[in-house]
Image 1: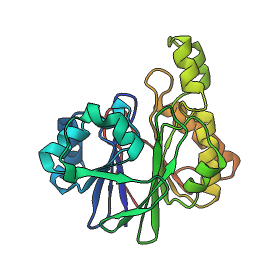
Image 2 (image 1 turned 90 degrees about the vertical axis):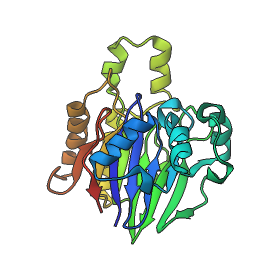
Image 3 (image 1 turned 45 degrees about the horizontal axis):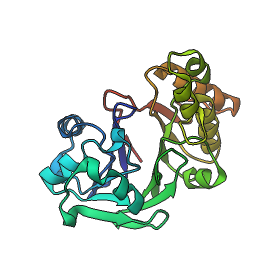
Image 4 (image 1 turned 45 degrees about the vertical axis):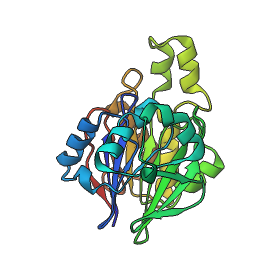
Length: 263
């Protein structure tokens, strides 16, 4: 059994709760420690039970609360070597016993959950996505991705549940108020995934057996939940897949906890 709940998802902060019967993990901690503790309590979790904080990359919306939580509760922080180097000053002093370094692509275990990491195309030093496997179930987190390539797609296939980025609507972004250099960054191969591409990926994964999806890292300025959902729903309909009957599609909200999903 695996449980996944997005605590927060977006440029203002990211954190995801993953658990099995005996293991409790946070992926990223990009908000204040207090807000993360409160959101965990909202879904019946307890920060004192968290056994690891996994970091996808060094941007502040993914690491802001990691140092505080680690120091306060002696929680180990896991990141690859380049990410540790890039974020060390931001998260400040960490107990050496709480510093854990993984090699991207090399699986490791936390409790009864096997963790696999994979490279993602984003403008960070060595960003990663995560596969979590337990009891023959697989949950995947893949956000902050500028484009989809075959290697990335291979790591998504076979997931029972996936939190996938659906950051922006291209036309909203183009006509929006962001300065042109920022628009270029978001639309670049190392930026963020748009609704249209996310929808195609969801449809492909659904055809290949994935049943539960959360759409995450939605832009406040260049997207809204109903649009992201409808874009995905349309792509699924084209494959004769009915949302709500054949698959579940939900939203990982930027300002509140998502529905907790169990596989």
